Length: 199
Image 1 (cartoon, rainbow, N blue to C red):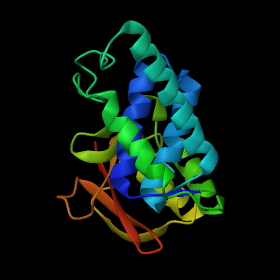
Image 2: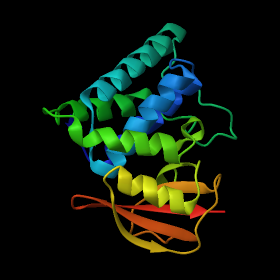
Image 3: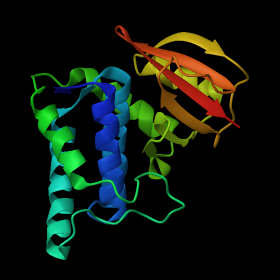
Image 4: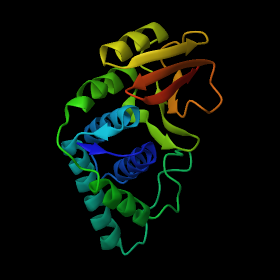
């Protein structure tokens, strides 16, 4: 598995969003990689296979950029805030290079969390960065969200606010930031992640 800090997984998520926007990734593959990245944000680790697939997607994106003679691939439409328009591919190369230094054996810790991400979030509309680590509409209501979290092996540390409905805007963020209308703090070992929801 690959172990890394949350900022690295967020950076990789932005790279996946860019690759998907530029059609270097098929939508289904982008959703699968996004599930692995959510697992990384929650647990601090990523399956080696998932990481290798992200590396391959970035390589395809770089091939396209060099073929076009561009220093950076254009971003999606201005309405999509997933990737800033002038963010260079070099940022992602640095993130990938650093992540390779943290590779070790064992993928088991990441398994259940990918299923949680797939069931809890609309991964086709995922966004990384810009004020939170990860953001996407919820596919389930609050009670089911808590059940899925526990089933995936996450510790529900605290719950506050009215339970959200399906399609509410959910985000993963640092627990130190101001909470949303609904907040559940999730634990994985000594790692803590806030899951906020509005709507």
